[in-house]
Length: 483
Image (cartoon, rainbow, N blue to C red; front, side, top):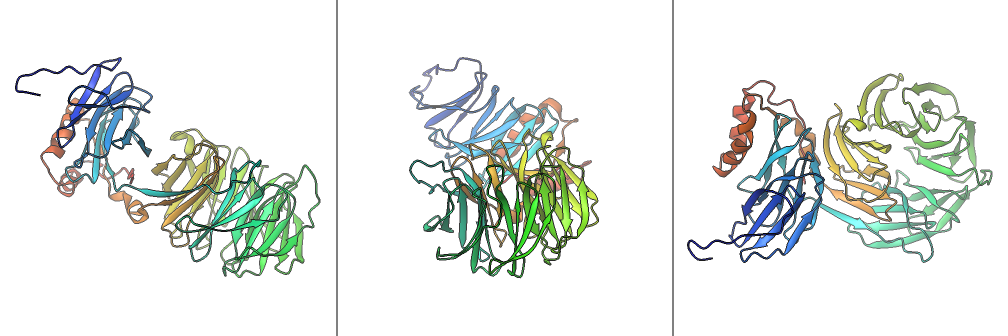
């Protein structure tokens, strides 16, 4: 365009709320009341229209390198997009009211957002990477994934599928071998703590033991075969000497590795969804459709019944020190319990988004919780119940999720036929208390301009955070999101 020449860009179906140039000046991004974002060339052409927000788009901005674009909306979210118009998930959900402005810091490492919820938030951005596995491809079979597990050394991942098989993968996503033998959906898969064996459970009412090379060693099939029964869950004891299995009728069996039964007892009068040994091998926890969790000795002696969920309980597992139990339920809650059966913390997931919690587990450090929901989202929480991160790449129910043994990755298995390995900065998440939340009562409507001016003038975040720390309640929020 020449000096003084006017160019009008037309294409939005509603008022244009925000406009921003790319760093090289060759592109323009606009956000509109019509809920869309458009990327324009200087000649007025619209190479891309970005859709995803569910309310009007209030603010858009390029990063310093011109590659990601950030947008804010009255739908209370901040979203990231690549230059080709693809959304970089997960979106950032932490504000409780419309988000008015959003900008990148000059170095592109941080996003600042300002909202009518009287807060400004800083979000760390480090281009999170994840690896998607989609290898269950048996013709004529459904390929929904029901279970996933890391090997003790963290180098092998096993996925259990509705296609009746288990796939073994390397950490970089290379297929290693397929375990074939079950005649119905494989509901669970676990590695022995010594890493030598793999155990699988199935709707065919059997449990199978395998070597790492895929050779089947044993079939544990003393369950009564019935259309109304299936083995839903299994767990190795920490010393790899026993396997605990649980079925739909409420029966728990403890097996020796040679396939003989060590003990059988009725744990519940309804379906058992999950069974797990404590780290010391002395306690077995069961989670049931009857809304309770029970703690047992391997001899079948009942220690405690944990009551507090208002709907069926999908999982129960221990912290690495064995002192805390985490449970998840259809009632949209995650609960933490001590060994005396006291509910020491309840995280109401519905306060953030609706969704039955299918799985919840501690990180190896015990400082983080990962949870999976019916709507396909994976969430990460701290022990205080503050939401740290949402991962929403899956498009269907996530049945199983857990941390790698080294705590550096999360693995998830979904009914969208995929498993995903997420590589995140968990150290940063564990230290998320350092992120500030600013009360903007005194700043009010000037907050949006303040956030934009601050980053444009290249004031460092550390200096700003130091100044804000002097204000009241400046460090209360713990909403660090790292993409």
